[in-house]
Length: 101
Image (cartoon, rainbow, N blue to C red):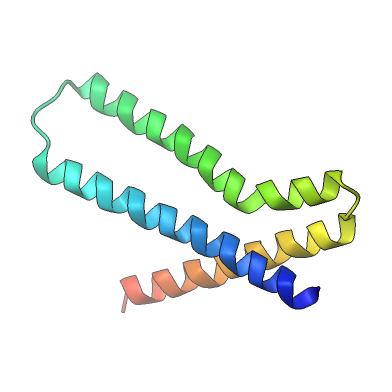
């Protein structure tokens, strides 16, 4: 059970990291080809993407642990959340190291 929780945490963190990479790729492509749209429209689009991204990331990080917690698997849910957050911390650290080296 422990190894499956670790793998689930890694899967959740990988999904979150891939989603971030996808959003960055799309934003860069839009930035290169964007015309001079109204400033309020650009800001609105950014804020809507921010809200949507918060929802998607919350589902990746909290979705399965909350479901497990509500179905009585409290200890496993907290472990899974810890593994997911730990994997995200490692992924963030690696991204920062790669970006600034």
